[in-house]
Structure formats: structure tokens, C-alpha cells
Length: 125
Image (tube, rainbow, N blue to C red; front, side):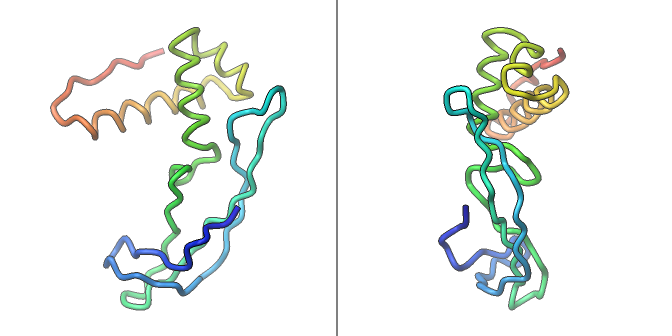
């Protein structure tokens, strides 16, 4: 998979650039299709800003930064944890319990960012 947009916005100075520094291909897990595991080969380009000269990775809407799974897989796993438990959800999604716990902590952080002042959710497993 590749992003069709030719330009990216520099997170440092907000300048728009199309200067590719390098291509970074990696494999990302997505929700399974029937009994088959789905792996996506994704290109997250690194761009060089023409204004500040800093290198940055492009943002992809369906994957969090530095993650090897899609956002929709994360939501599926979280839903399964709420219906069962961490170990069961981990087994069904070919993950470790610690990966599932990381998903839960990230979701907690995201929820707290959306609603300032809301109480901290206790996600202790």
C-alpha cells in the first residue's frame, strides 16, 4: 500500500513538501479475513522539509506511529477484551497478553486526550 498524496506537511514548521528522503516499507497486521491473517505491506515515506531541512515520516490515518497493526485491529481486540478477557483476546488475534495490554493503555490515553478533566480509567489487568 502506498499513499496517493504526493505531499506531506512538516510537523516542525507546517511547510508542505514533496521531497522524498527515503521509502520505509514494513508489514502491518489488519483484521483477519475469515480464518486467514491479513498482512499489509505499507510504505510510510520519509520526507525532507524544503524549509527547515528536517526529515519526518508521513502520517497514515489507519496506523498509529510506530505500530505494526491497524487502528481497526486494535479496536477489534479491545472489543473482544471487554467481552471476554486479555488472554482470550490475545490468543484469538495471535498477539501476546502484553501487546493487548499496550493497546488498552493507548486507548486510555487517547480517551483522556479527547475529554480533558475526565477521571482516569483503571485498565489494570
